[in-house]
Length: 296
Length: 338
Image (tube, rainbow over all chains, first blue to last red; front, top):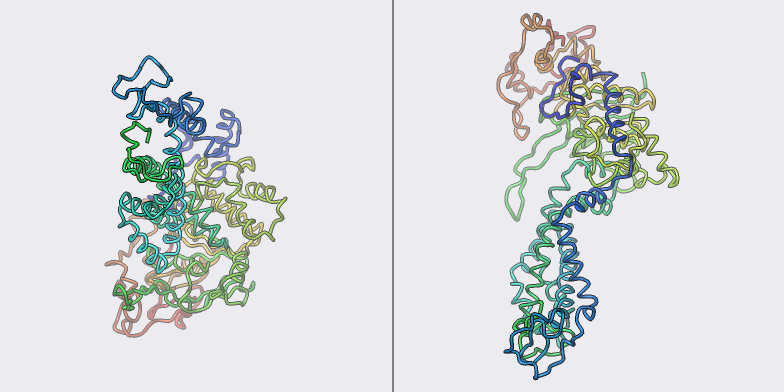
């Protein structure tokens, strides 16, 4: 065949020193298979999954390991705070003077970080405060990813009128400032717990994820493998969750991870303003948590 | 002559052009496919050639029911499938499958090869019982010349040619009778093109497949096709056996296309007579009146602007030159061979 040529074609040359013509034709297939077989000898066929690849890559990186240990430490602190301090974060003893310098030598002790105005151990309050922060961070991010992911997916996949309606609703929610909206919403709760904060932030925070998801779905749904799925007769659910979602989720994960820190900060702000209930506190407390040195 | 397995009658696909934001008003249409008729016989390969934007891929999509036809019929074994939906459409999909152009985008990067080739069985569970699926997938890998051990690998671990084999295996999974190949080798390296073409030919023999082979590469089409159809601007301008088209082209557009095929022999290249067409392909939203090719045709006369030439066997010609051609002035050009 004299004239088969295509500028778009890209095929790495199989072996240095073997010309294209030698490689062509009937033998080509054999060569191609041979190179793969050679590679197998080096890495003996352990079924390599994408997760496996990622783990192999990550476990050699010091930054990943350090971050993982820190995150693990905070999660353990949130679940078992009593393992980190003997002090009761609510025990107020006015004998402890908050003007006194913290006792830096008393590592992990009651007075390690000093005391607040009511004589409570700030170290204990930091340890016990981790739970609220992490609960809010994780659950708000999860809620926002599910709500935003689903609405964005539906809007992007169906397009047209469905997209127009969902996108306008998204715009309305997008117009409400997160902090102000959360203040107003939380005021409407008669009992405020960590979960009311999760609900308030979840209801208000999903719009960004929805937009990111919609954009990603719009790109991915054009892909040939989605068309191929349709040509096979795949239904909407299969196309959405087997083909589009796994390929569109990456930017959502990035945005959600960045937002996680933002939600913790927002919760801290609400707490500082005395509106976020803490550990079952029924009404806003007059003193501000942030000034007490709470973790969040 | 074998029976017609697929018959296309006057198939039209127009994409509406709209204006206005709230109240959309149709102001025109892109006539991507505009009245195409042909038939595909059992076990044969029909090549479709034409330059970019002539409607080849749209034709494939309409035949696959990925795009709904504006009008016309697609008869599969005598039954019109162009308006089917739901379960009936799903059933028809078992019989007509597709091989895509770009093996780098047509395989889901998040699925293993086993999942990709096994997906047809999940969608159509009646084809292979659950317990046999892994075996069926491995058999398919073997059929397309890949190591059945690769079942747990991901597409990125394969070369372009191997990926296209995976795409072909997926197309074969449902044991279809027709496979529509939309430029299946144009994204591949030259040496790998030959392998994939040979594989397609071998599979055709083994499974009695009928191919519709869309390409812009005339030499490959000639190699694989029994009959060839030439498209220009949404219309079929000439159709016939490969000898009739390649040696005895009667439509000026076909002749121009053939004259552009590179010739490996430098001396022959010097002496041959290339037809260089003037201008670009006109917009399919506003095609020329009469014959669509007249704006670039050296034979065009007043009649070409007024009268649409029909795709029919010209009465003035004889022998291999007497095949369907949509031209008012058909004649065989000397030296038109590729």
